Length: 327
Image (cartoon, rainbow, N blue to C red; front, side, top):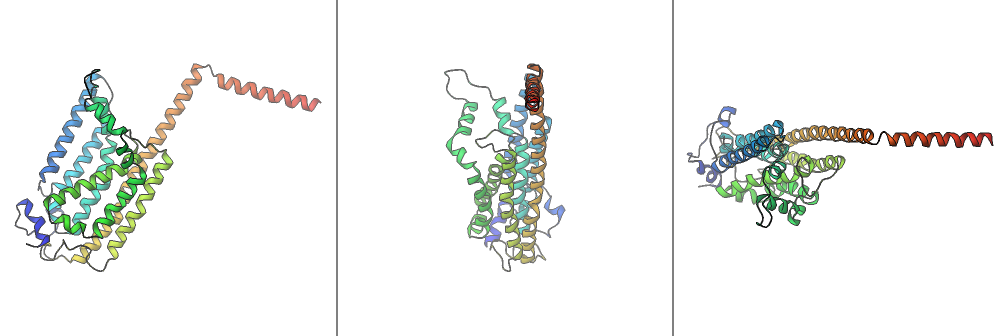
């Protein structure tokens, strides 16, 4: 049983897949840990949102849609034929990697799950220890989270997930085991969440850089990503041994497929960049608007004292100017 075949057996398949086509890739083929995880995540989120709505609090439906879409993209790449092809085709695996590390995290973060949890979980009564809410707050304030969510950690992690995995024997090693493959997929998702968490800035976290810094963080990570895609496209030999001619769908040229995998990686970087920039621009505009409203309210309260003071200052300058002219 070769390495390429090892991955094929966990779905109970015969190890031979038909030709690669969109309809074959989108066929239902559940990977249970991901399916159960997604259903649970949707259930918990819905319960929390309903708890807020019942209380008469606002929780935007848009956030719920983003969260659901994020989970939907995870299910789409882990519970369909794409997951089976991802075992034997580099290009199919790369689609999974890109969606899990760059598209799903952004959508999930737009759902603001931490904010929702903090608002939906009830604080425990004084003196009765720590409940889930207290533990979550403690975790958010912990040194560990401060370190792993710092750009100094998230950017190298994000970049290393690409280079260290595919340009070393690590990928081939992990792909031999069902658990290795699962761990790799979860890692893609986790690293994506960590990388985009401070950048999206929807949820509270230890690092809240300003808008300019967040856009810079995004642009520091992306060139490495694009360069990796180009490196894979240009490679003249197979980078990994997992994908073998024997296991590949009939008519597949492995080097062509590897080139396609690199192209997918290179092109995919544009999608999250665009989504993040749009989201940041909207947040920025909204925060400016909020500040303007705050200034207006302050002006109403103090009877435009600031403006009056400024006018008085101008009048004083004017008087001084006249006195100087007269002198």
